[in-house]
Picture 1: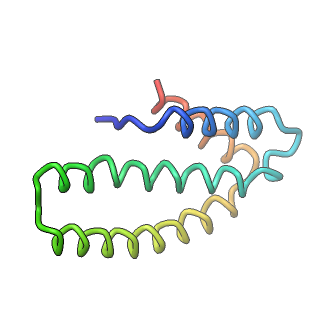
Picture 2: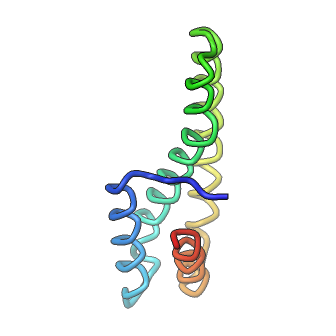
Length: 105
C-alpha cells in the first residue's frame, strides 16, 4: 500500500536524502530529515484518513473531531520521531534514507 504525496514534498524529500547521503557528517542534517519524515507522516495520515473521511461526507462535527484527534496524535508521534532520529548515528541515518527511497519507488 502506498500514498501519493505532493510533487513539492517529493522534491523536498529527495533533496534532503541526497544532502544527508552525500554529507561528510550526516548527523549535521538530522533536523532536515526529521522535518521531512514528519511531513511525510502528516501527508500519509491525511491521505489515508482525512481525505476518505471527507469523501464519505461525514458531518462537520465528525470531521472536526477527527482533525483534532489527528493533530494531537501527530504532535506526539512527531516528538517521538525527532527523539529517535536525533539519537541515530551516521550509518543508521543513511539506512533510514535508503528505506525512504525504497518506499518512494
